[in-house]
Amino acid sequence: MKEKNPRYNGLWVFKPDLTKLRPGDVILTRNAEASSFKGKRRSDIIAKVTRGKFSHALICTALPTLIEALADGVSNISAQNCFVHDLKHVRVLRYPNQAIARAAASEAFKFFGKEYSVQAALRSVLPGVPISDSGDDRTFCSALVAAVYRAAGAPEFASVHPMKTTPATLEKSAHFADVTSDVFVSILSPSNIEEMSALDGDRAVSPMAGQSKLLNSYYAKLSVPIDEFFAQYPTLTRKKPTSFFECLPFINSACIAANRLPDHPEANEARERVRFIDDLAFEMLSEGKWQAMMRAAQAIDDESMRYSLEESFKADPDVNLADTLGMIKATEAQIASRSSILIDPVGQSRVWDEWVRMTHEAVSELNTRLNVLNEVLERVFPSATRG
Image 1 (tube, rainbow, N blue to C red):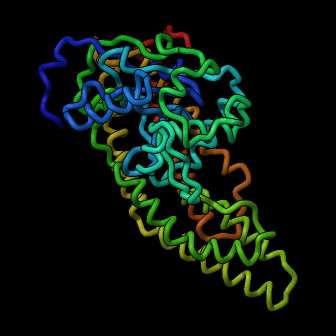
Image 2 (image 1 turned 180 degrees about the horizontal axis):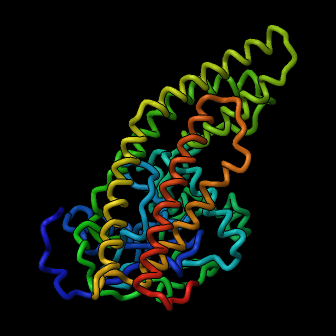
Image 3 (image 1 turned 180 degrees about the vertical axis):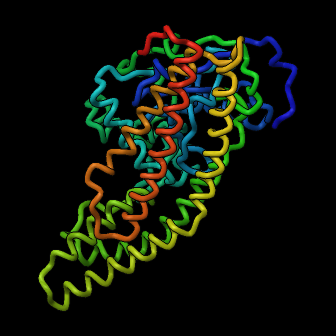
């Protein structure tokens, strides 16, 4: 438990309302409240050089998850645990076509675990500096947003090079609606605010902080044999994966395609190659490091649910209606998103089977959370209207 900061005694801040946040929403922020002078100064420079008000961009995927590209790589953060000190430090942009916005949100998940490119970020803000054609697959915050909207078919992004997109580009774009005042609501500082992340300041240390580094290391080990396999058997699978999580369906489809080949020496070699990749991926996914991060994050979530449940029995419970409704909506969205791979989970890959097993566990935990939240809602707010 962090030491209480007297600054937040009676202070009103702004928190995203999860009932209003949508997949595909873009959040622009500025590090105006950072305790680090260096971090604040860097944010100011980016905003000034790009002639905008913001220095960082995030995109909402499945509620309550926000995807962002930071120095350690592309990772996620829960909007439920975020706040800003001042509305002028944040902007929420919404693309009008919700089908494209949802597709962009889905595309953003594919970037999870990719490396951050300092050089590309610098090139994007410096006028007259050419875009590199080195084939570097790394990204940065606003480039990620532009890339996923381009991949989702947003016509306005078809001629926009993601690597020349800055937070200011997004801020000034006429293709988004400003919904900041609808999404961020003013609240009295929660009792656990020291454990939360300020999008315009200091981030709380998360059990998942090392996820990008870990996933990058997994992908680095897999990319070499996958590149060799793809070069020799380009017709067996679709495009090459560019992140660890993209490797999982790639390996499964490669296994299925290889197993369908008629028996002959070349087919047997293809099956051996993909089996090697599958075994390597399975060893990494099942070694326990990723699961340890997930268990630590789950423990924090369980503690929060226990607190809400205990409070719900009190005469004056510390339970917020908007937060409870938002978490119910977000949990339902997470269940729907993760359950999608369970609809047809048949695979011929060890790593895919392990991923399906882990997904079953995750969905079970989410259903438990949903049951608790519904119980709290019915006890504390029996007449509440669900959105």
